[in-house]
Image 1: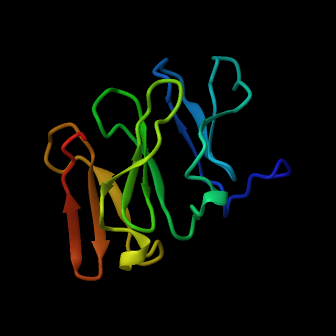
Image 2: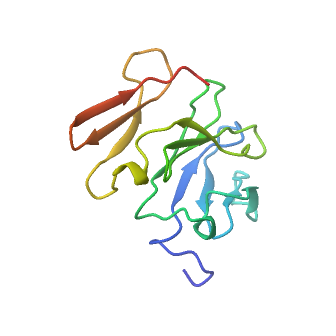
Image 3: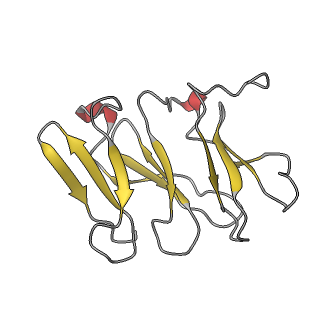
Amino acid sequence: YDSGWRVDEHPRFLSDVNGDGLPDVVGFGDAGVMVALNNGDSFDTETEWLGDLGYNSGWMVEKHPRFLSDVNGDGLPDIVGFGDEGVMVALNNGDSFDTETEWLGRLGYNSGWRVDKHPRFLSDVNGDGLPDVVGFGDDGVMVALNNGD
């Protein structure tokens, strides 16, 4: 907290982002996505893995949930963010995240999806091994199947 990381602004996760079997720290900071790799004894100093999806670029905890999940089946967790216009994905290449692209033009903040009213999850609902998007909206449950790209 004293180093500037705020619970209400900067979500953090533990996930093995480099494929070595050890959980790393992934944080959505002011300027982007920071990663502190686990070296087995401690965590290395954090480095920037993506210069976007952070607080200063408009990604806010109260508006834009973000998750880590392997959406393309390569064994590495990718970033899935529910932005203003829809679902954005930043693929993990093993030492950074690629620039995010829109995977689904729905379920975003500007189309009425709210964190406090409409939970959204990633889960493999059709058994193909890829996480699908499940959203609980005003009109019921919406499912968007993941085709891997």
